[in-house]
Length: 357
Ligand SMILES: *[C@@H]1O[C@H](CO)[C@@H](O)[C@H](O)[C@H]1NC(C)=O
Ligand SMILES: *[C@@H]1O[C@H](CO)[C@@H](O)[C@H](O)[C@H]1NC(C)=O
Ligand SMILES: *[C@@H]1O[C@H](CO)[C@@H](O)[C@H](O)[C@H]1NC(C)=O
Ligand SMILES: *[C@@H]1O[C@H](CO)[C@@H](O)[C@H](O)[C@H]1NC(C)=O
Ligand SMILES: *[C@@H]1O[C@H](CO)[C@@H](O)[C@H](O)[C@H]1NC(C)=O
Image 1 (spheres, rainbow, N blue to C red):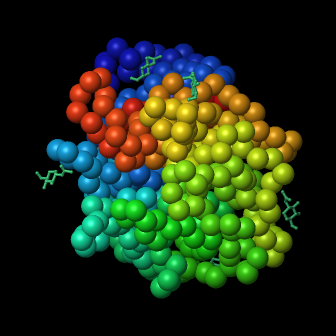
Image 2 (tube, rainbow, N blue to C red; image 1 turned 90 degrees about the horizontal axis):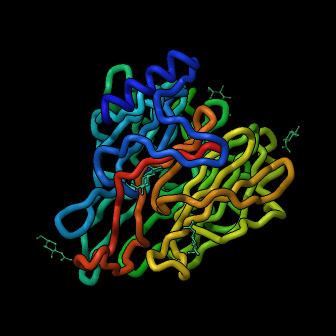
C-alpha cells in the first residue's frame, strides 16, 4: 500500500472519526482496496469480529494451472492491510468458514483426492473441522462433520452461536459434480454438530455455489446451481431460524438474472448479490450484475455492475460495506487468450474491492 494513501486514510480517520482507513466510497459506488497478496479463487471468506476479514484456502496459480492451498490471510478494515496467518491444517478449496465469538471456524470443504485415469481434477468433501484463534495465531481440531454430511461450497449462516451450512457439494471432478439439499448445524457453545428439525434439514432443491446470509432471524440462500456452471438458478430460499419447524420457504421474488458461482453479503437489512459464472452472453463467461434483495418489500433491484466482474469468491458485509476479495476473472475451464497471450483455463485475481450501498 502506498504511504500517501495510508497517511491520507489516517487523516480522514482523525478528522471524521471514520472507523476505516480505506478509501472513501459514496452510496452506490465501488472502491478498490489493497489487493490480496496472492491471486486466489474458490476460497472461503469470513468475518472475525467487526474489523477482520479472513480468506481461507482456495486455489492459487501454478506454472500452468492452479493448485489447492492452505493459505490463510487476514484483512484489517481499519488499516486497509493484509497479513498472512498460520496456514490451515490442510489444503482445502470451496471450504465452509464462519467467524463466531472472535474465532474462525473451518468446517469441511473439498480436498484433492488421487487422480484415476481420465481425471485431471478430483476434489472430494472432507469431514475435518478446525477452529483458529487469532490471539495465538493457531489452529485446533474440533468435532468432524457427522459421517455422510461432509460437503464444500455450502452457504454459511451464523445465528446466536450456531453455524448453519445449507446445500453444497461432495465431489467436483473432471466431467462430474453433484449438489446436495442437506442443511447441517454446528453449535459453537457445545462444540457439537446438531440435527435440525426435518422441515429445516433440507433445502427445497439442491444447491451449490450459491450465496446467502442471515438477516435478522432469517437465513437466505440465493441463486447457485446444480450439477454444473450452466445449471444456474434464480431462487431465494428462506428459513426462519427462530421457527425451524416452519421450514424453508421459496420467496416469490426471483433474481433478475439467474446465477451460480456468485457472491453476496448483507448490509442494512438487504442482501446484495454479485457476479457469478455460466454467462453464455459474455466472452469471459462471468456475470457483472450487482442486485439487491429487500426481504421487507420482497423485491429485487439492479445496482451498479461490478467494475471487475468475478466468480469463485465470497463476500462479507461489514461496517456498511460489502467486501469482495479475489475470485476468478473467467469461467473455469473456458479457454481464453488474454491479450493475445497463451490460452488459459482459469484466471484467479488479486483484485479486492468493496461495494457501498
Ligand atoms: C480499480 O481496479 C481496477 C482493476 O485494477 C481498475 O481497472 C480500475 O480502474 C480501478 N478503479 C479505480 C477507481 O481506481
Ligand atoms: C503442467 O505442468 C506439469 C509440470 O511441469 C506437467 O506435469 C503437466 O502435464 C502440465 N499440465 C498441462 C495441462 O500442461
Ligand atoms: C447450543 O449448545 C448449548 C450448550 O449445550 C445449549 O445450551 C444451546 O441450547 C444450544 N443451542 C441450540 C440452538 O440448540
Ligand atoms: C419467525 O418466527 C417467529 C416465531 O414464530 C415469529 O415471531 C417471527 O415473526 C418470524 N419472523 C419472520 C421474519 O417471519
Ligand atoms: C455487463 O455485462 C453485460 C452482459 O455481458 C454487458 O452487456 C454490459 O455492457 C456489462 N456492463 C458493464 C458496465 O460492464
